[in-house]
Length: 450
Ligand code: ATP
Ligand code: MG
Image 1 (cartoon, helix red, strand yellow):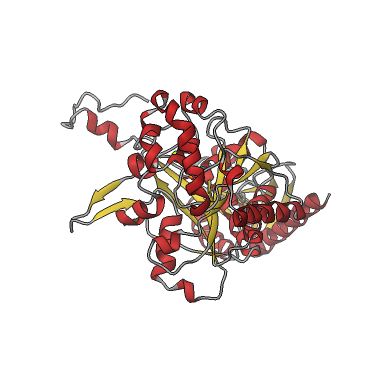
Image 2: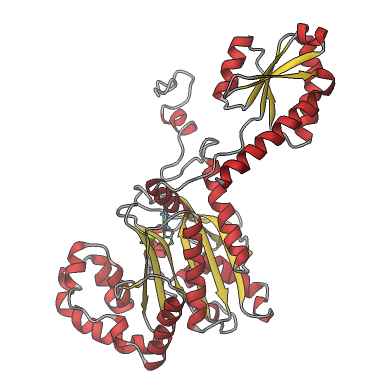
């Protein structure tokens, strides 16, 4: 649409009106016509979390910048390039959460949750903020669903967490999300592995990207995660963490795959997964879609046994995942997953004339207070325009009520699908509507059964 004010005619500088009606780059509006999809997905998430005994946690949109620097890690892209950091009026450095785990861990420690019976299971549905190169499936404000379990170190627990994500995908009708698992070992085995990796990389590092050159000494493991072609090439033939696990880490990984096998979950071992966040150890996993394209990782997770201790809490093993809800919805769209339509209008009434309006207003309210979706024309439309609107709104029934209906004491309810008219005496209009609602419900559950 052309911006009417772009000539600055109303005294505003030309860029200002554009900003007034344009959202910031990388943000999205979830419109009334789309929000039922989000509600559906979030409802299933809450249901599945309930089944697995997770409780919701809600953490602040911003935290002290240190929380993310420490948790996410100084060498990550998130901390180095992507955070929305600002000083508040009191001179504190605050940051909009770029992900959920750091705040959850901060809250776990601050609220003494380590003294609760273990495991402590928490899930979140939240917005996250990253200054990213915006593209399909990659935004600056996006939504994450995540789950974290504290206090259980056994590999069964990793499998338990993974199986929850799998059940969610199943319930959302997603059959083609591939599970990939790997182990990146513990700090002990990573020391030896890091040495081997650096040995492999040193002769090749000059041809790699700047970021990887920086990572070589500080965090060589992250080089495995680089998406640049020349870096991927240089990684060819590099030693992989999974092939250099210590005895305990190997046993843990074997425990994980055995548990996944016993659950009948399909997965592939992918030695290349390391995750961009520094706090992971041992298990890392992803659910990847073939449909979403370059931004194919829908869900990413793993174990982070060192994080609670690193953030000043008592040593507590932990495992979790987070899932991009935008990417999940894109996947559902391309997979043709069924999303239930929002509840429709049962009855749309066009009142013809002031007398009818006054009589119908409380009647409509009475039906609404009983829980029925009953709507009345708000614009004073003609009968013809009102009917057209009832149709557009997808009402199951419509009624036109004016002076003649009031005088005769009887109206009729029109079935919008069949055109059938059902007599409804005004004296028990509500009961007639309730009967129709019950019939419509019985029809719907009959359809569901067959
Ligand atoms: P990527 O490699 O795609 O950048 P990441 O490693 O930065 O992902 P995580 O920090 O693990 O992602 O976040 C978990 C999930 O959140 C991702 O798998 C993805 O589904 C989603 N996600 C991450 N960043 C964005 C973003 N900018 N926009 C939309 N979804 C995102
Ligand atoms: Mg990223």
